[in-house]
Image: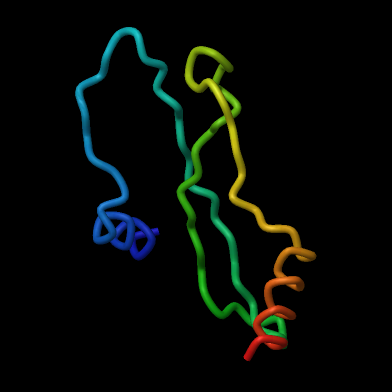
Length: 86
């Protein structure tokens, strides 16, 4: 957990701001996981910090959502164009 926390601080993941009474604070928690190799032995302990986003309310905490996801077919088309025009 210390390694994960140090990495978050080093990357300047967040900055502290004063709490406004009109804003809803979203809780977070540490999720402890084990990363094992192919033999089943523990390779690394992982502890990502995750936000409890299910406490957010539409129209209060956010107004729209989006996901930066690309369809596999789009990647196939782009790669085929690159290979064809190279």
